[in-house]
Image 1: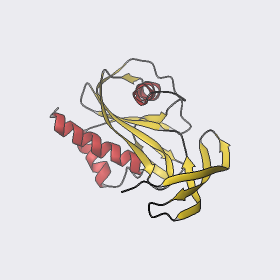
Image 2 (image 1 turned 135 degrees about the vertical axis):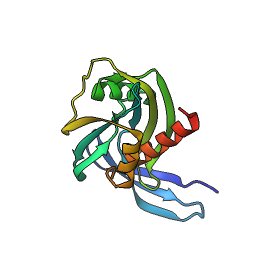
Image 3 (image 1 turned 180 degrees about the vertical axis):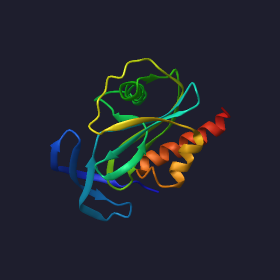
Image 4 (image 1 turned 45 degrees about the horizontal axis):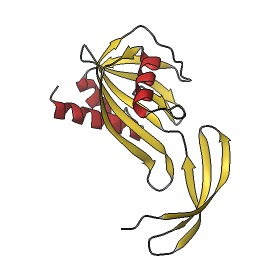
Length: 183
């Protein structure tokens, strides 16, 4: 199979650092050309499933703009320009929770939307996370840091209390990796 080929691109909208919309002219593998193919650029981000030394999982109860009801979310955030995904994950875990970890397992990097781009998610599992007493970040949302058991995480997934696809994928992939590690 041949990939699609970008023939040209132009910026249609760039209101801030968090969003850029481009219009691409693309050539399909069969030679057809589509003009004005919408492409969305957002910053790459890292999300972390962190298990503490006591065996609980760090998760926030919060309200996001697109999800106006209390839901569960893992620690994470945008990569700084030029920042390595693992470095960003370590920074975000400490900034948001005050926890650090020395054992990190990458769970993969994923394009958010296969046809429109919309950034890339870098997912990680952090084991034996411990408090270091330094919480430096302040998100826009009100957040309550929870320590959940594995059973509570699985129930939250089953009950739809993790309504953001990337967050649900992280929990599923992270718990699967734990089963593979047998820890």
